[in-house]
Image: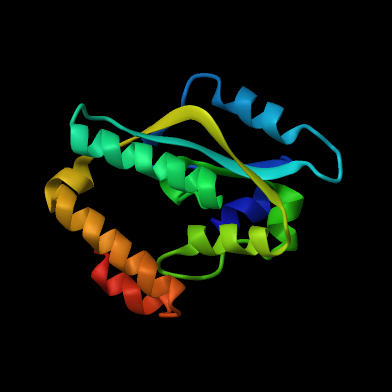
Length: 163
């Protein structure tokens, strides 16, 4: 992701997972969100999370992820993170981590008091990994891993439990 950001010739970067689809007019929403040039302006953001399934459990997980993202300004990579390129460079981009690089980037923005916005429009992410591994198992594993990360366990140690 850092290599792509380095050669990008535009002012805004969008990090999109291969199994995630953007909402209609996503680039317009991103541009509109990041256009303000005041000292107090938004420098990064992401979309609400949606899954390509009608399963109630995954719809609930997506809703909780949206609340979490808004409440603590901590979107995950599957929400299509976007950021002003100069800010990305200023915080030295993504750390070379095997896991939690998205969380780490958002933490760096928050440390600098940069504003992050979660847009109401939803990306649609594949539910395949959740369904194949089990929704309860995947949810519990993710909660445990993020908790251990915030307790100081290095993400590269946690990565072996993610696969």
